[in-house]
Length: 580
Image (cartoon, rainbow, N blue to C red; front, side, top):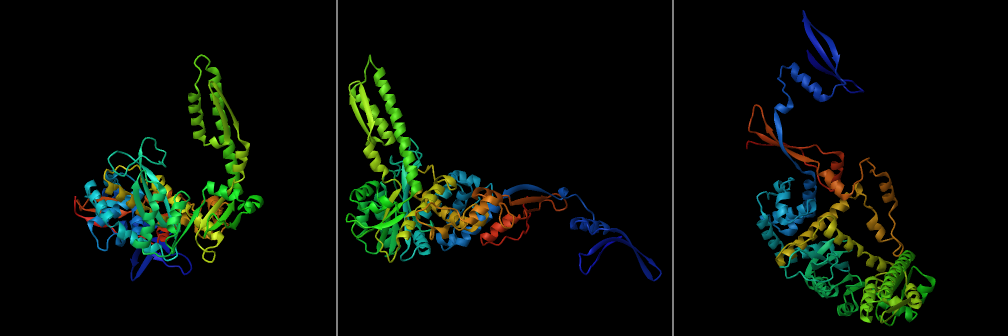
């Protein structure tokens, strides 16, 4: 018996099981079965059996000794090489460079301490791929010192990539809490993490207008935001050699004092926003009458209080409604707490409350809700009365929904609409901080004892965010992210609330791509890539002692992800070793 394949002109070949015999000079054939519907592996097995090749069960040939997640490692390492991150760190290969690349990759996979990193990267193929399997935490600390010494040169290269003459440069400041008491950078200050009883470390990040990080600087935890700005100006002008840029910062960083200092540099433009007190002064001088009366969404105004500047006043009705709702809630909460103090004063007849005790309690309530400006309070011995100040409340409510953007840029270089869009681009820096601090990279809590290690740790996390930023952009078709967001930011109404694009609405409704693949969040997509594994197998019969590695076949989703990343899916080649 044998298997014969009979070609067909317009359909798939017919596969037949036949037997043959000779009658004189002629060979006779007879078909025993039609095997066309059989799967190819089954046909191959029958063909080998008919050839007297001994067949044994697959599990008796080799066993899988262990399996390591590999797909996510492939994607991260491939993206780092695609971005040229290895060349950015050092022009020549060295062990320190490999360790830094491994720490960046592990920060994206499993954020942990440096000791935890040396444990966790053995749960994937990362340690093998980058050749750092024998490294311990002391090696990582030494590599961090190596990285910090090269920070200035790396930032200079990033500036050449992302910034040019006339670029918008975004700058913002945040802080992260510190665990411990030995680092000289850790100080009690404005704790943005709301972590009670812990010190903080302040750091400011420069990015391009799309949110790609360029530089980071670390400060003591009690450093005020405006004090960090001169360092960034010096870095832009002397280190990056950019004579003409537009610096964008929020009203807490670009204060009037800092803006006066920026005016000393003619080539350095800026975009900032006015504080509420300054807006109140504009309203008192009737400069904002057009916006207040007509509720214009956007109007360019001038004021003698800000010579040489352009002011763009904006009105957002949704912001106005939210501020009104919040004010009413705070007023009601303040009155409830003050009423409780009044009842307590009336109840304390045997040991009445003194005027100082009543004042202390009232002060705590007013400070908690920031409502002192809206209440009149009268305190006497064992007596308290309070009332709202309608004129103050009405005066503040008149400015609900109004904000004013200020800039030094002339109209021929920057329109009023683009001025507002430029300021709102600071949202991409806020996204960077959210990703750094809690979503993916988890820069906090900071445990390092030495100042240089804290600086290196934060710089390493910023480099990891740069890799993630590019990876998110490339994988956007497989994510719930709005693929048209960057384009819409440059053209949409600068004042009206942002709306997702029609494509984003359709993607969220269908939850499938055009190819029928499931739409993922960034975390679930990374987990799906991680299901591609590298299995180490050991031969159990015939050639005992031989081992080989084999990758699981990629799924359609994994193939699509690699194509979007601009990477070629590696060919599945077995690597054979004679090690036991």
